[in-house]
Length: 273
Image (cartoon, rainbow, N blue to C red):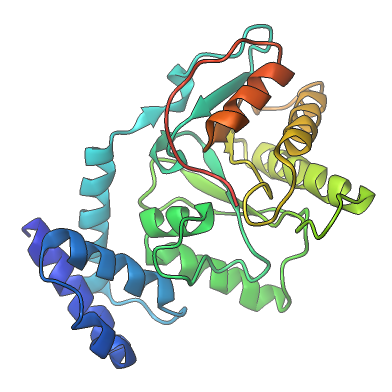
């Protein structure tokens, strides 16, 4: 199916499910970029409900083609930081990484971001993975029966991402100054993700800058906690062989490389909440 035709077909299916959005949808121009933005918006706002096989087949073909067009980055080929053979700092789009698992900085509902085309990593990951990711998260949360606590981790499939799995963790929201509890919860996010990865035999994990975006954890201190927690974890015997600190901003790349004792230099991309 031709690209624009696929997008329009998906929009029609979603608007039939959610007719309340039809008036807003009519305001979108008919060019491909605008219709693709409409599709992402509709996918973002769609609540968990049964998924149609015909929708999923078209969605998966579309997202797979977009994944290939963006270009997949092999996490195993990214160079390690000097003196830290298991750690890489990379500035790039986390949804392009081929690793065993990428980490999603989620909110306590664990259903992804419902704000259309929002710039957070939660939105980016769910948008690239497809609606199956929200469905799997919803199934887990229905079983759990309560919001996800800070500092834990859950594992889902990666669906249309290059990564095999997604590790979802809820970091602390800093209100005012950073507290001892904030620090422990952030460290717990990193420990919980690595522990869960090890339990599933995963060898490579890419972390975003958990809690540093909308959750307001200061970048420098968050990076210090991340590096200490990961390096402490590597002192154990386990299957995880590589951790990638994926950053969104030049300042975060510089902070991580300075903490790890390496000069600056890297690439370009997406990733914090």
